[in-house]
Length: 57
Ligand SMILES: [Zn+2]
Image (cartoon, rainbow, N blue to C red; front, side, top):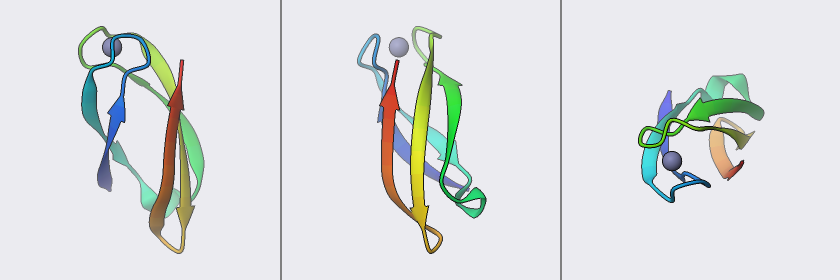
């Protein structure tokens, strides 16, 4: 597991989420630590390295 910083698309809070790089590229939903609203995180993993993290409401 690695952690990556993300920004909540609702309240703008930045916090870190744990990402399972062994799962390869994937999407999951997380809840903002501050406003508790769920949003989608899309992770691109290449050769076991996180290449891109994007997130949207
Ligand atoms: Zn938030």
